[in-house]
Every structure is written in structure tokens, then in C-alpha cells.
Amino acid sequence: KKNNGLFSVNDHCICCDSCMKIAPTTFSLATSMHQVVVSSQPETSMEVKKAMSALKSCPVSAIQFDMNSPKDLFNRLSGIGIGATQCN
Image (cartoon, rainbow, N blue to C red; front, side, top):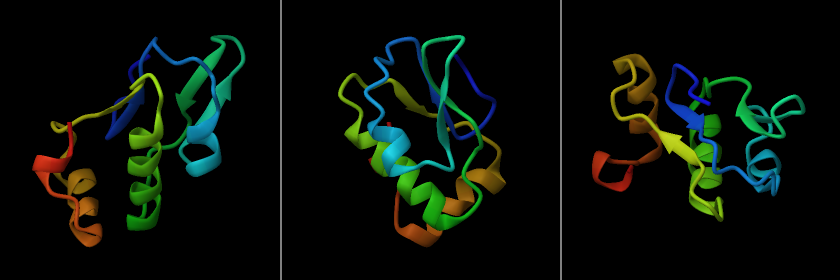
């Protein structure tokens, strides 16, 4: 399900919980949906870095990164060295 922000989780989620272990402030289990959701968009550079690590570790590519998010969210990536060519 789409979350209006930098990260979202699609319907391919298999609840492996790796993202919740890597970025627990961003991802949580939605029991009613039986999948992981973005409970809170990352606010700090460290939270963005953890969320990107979770995205890369997802075995079914269920975590999405929105390149069209508001500029203030996208600018958080500049502090951790992630460029647009690294984000899909």
C-alpha cells in the first residue's frame, strides 16, 4: 500500500521482517493487512540510511523508493552519499 512519502511497501511483501529489524522506526507490521507498512517516514539521515538498507535487503523488492517525493525529503539523502543513480 502506498504511503505518501519517500518510502512505501507494495503488495509483494511476505512479512519476512528483515526491514523491521534494519529500520524499526520506519517499518512496522500491519496485522490487519498481514504485511509490513511504512509506519513513519525517515526524518534523519541515519533513518534514511537504514531505510535504504532495508530496501536493498528485501528479498521480494517490496519496498519502494519514490524519486518524486518532496524535495525536503529527498535532500536528506545528500548527507549520506546516496545519489539518484543508486535509487530505483
